[in-house]
Image 1 (cartoon, rainbow, N blue to C red):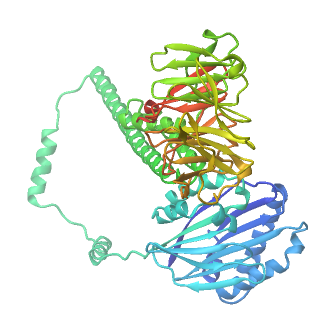
Image 2: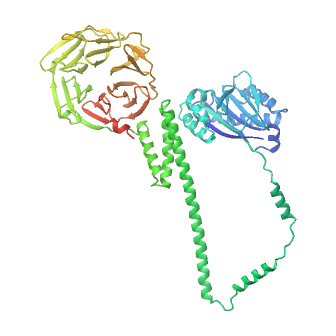
Image 3: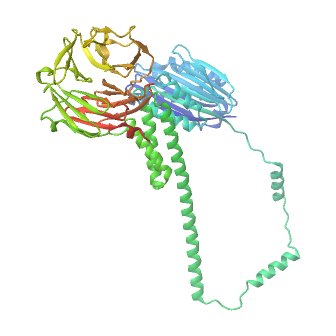
Length: 612
């Protein structure tokens, strides 16, 4: 006999979408014997939540009536007729324009019958391999049969369930031999998805139970007990009993006060034993619960790490679950070292993955201390100093770090209202409409003559200058020649794959990194490299910075979120900063991130942030 274990993974109704799993278990013995045990996945699209609930109940009732009561024949015949009949009579009980999908699995004796009508797919995992068994359509019900094996996992799921969850996460969930763990991996992913009303699955694992037969020794023992005769005591037993009776005899009388005292003492001992036993049982239950909570928290943390690079929001859902388990564990054992370590780990991950309110970075320097009304717009970080350009006052503020020694360079009208600037060895380079201007305290001269289209970034690597022009769709490169620079020439050797209207910024550290609305594109020697920078969760990227001597790329969006990747495209962190980010840059070694908020500079110690 086949016994299905069933777990459901369904989202809450959203819009006009609704999914439900129903397990026809506990029916009359006659119904199960003739029709088997059915698991039904029902999906409705186009009905409101209240209407869908009423429709759903009516459909489930009709499934029972048709399959278990009205239709004759074997389970496979019944199943196909029932699915087609309900689909054809749909207008009778669905007064609205609603799309219906039915997926069913019937377990009868040693067989399984699978059927689909509408959109959805049924798969089987057997001995580590996954097979697609049935894919439905709205034209005709599809039904197949087979002989399930112990340990088989059948998954009945809607079309959107397979489409919205990544294959890597599904693979991880289906590899689990514990149905509860599979459900715990998939449920947060479904319930955190905006389209969860279309997503649902029934997870069915097969167990085979055999009736236990009594051993021959047990049968013999039962017979002996049934056909037992009275047994008379031997002479030795009689002597023992007499001695025992004699040794307990007492000729005198025990005073009433002593009897009362003995009674009180016995009652106290009894109550103490009961209380001790209750306390011991309570402690054992708490220990088991603590071990269970720790195990569940560890599983969620592992799952979060595995899916982080695929979808950080799903990872965050796992971490929040782990944190809730650890909160309960802390109430049971506040001083447990493992609970403390796991709690520290989850709190760190919540911070790094954007699950907390955000961080308030430490103030590095207030520019008002150097010039009243200062308002920086550009920030560049070099080996030992941070440079901030205020185009309105025509001033450059230079602050060393970590010492915070300062100096102010006043350029006045020579540099006022320039849009971009870069520090050089002996001065500064400014981008204007006619090209590039070099300025220091002693002189100002034009080193590049060029009318730009729409420049979005100005960068320097080595001694070369670069301008990313969105309108002309070129990355211009200028190399030093004599006391000036060469004419600008196109750096890209081929057509980039990004869309030029979506370009937002540029950073260079040997490799060229172009920021667009949809991602970061990297280039080497003029040619594009294939890197995967997942932009899930990035809302309108604005700024990019890279460390020249460390594997770190940072992107800031309009909501002041910072996203950190290594140079291979592995997402390291997503952090909300409680400041408005006007400009930012990273120190060459990747230790410090400097953030400019108009008149104030903040810094974040990245080594400390990422350390365990």
